[in-house]
Length: 80
Image (cartoon, rainbow, N blue to C red):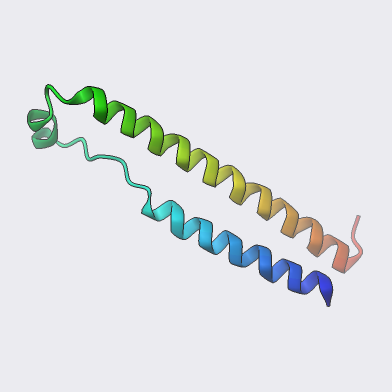
């Protein structure tokens, strides 16, 4: 059952990454936020770009792990 343990390990990593994804937050862009941050958009824009890059990285890692799990399941079932 080596493949089954590997699948469960990868599933645990996916769960951890999705939890991490929920922790990455973009600054709110409400009317009040825009009014309060008229002169401070330079740093805010950089933060938005950093968070988007983090989310993209996490999502690509999750997609890679899901593909790996699918290939492991196919190996267990013997489907080609």
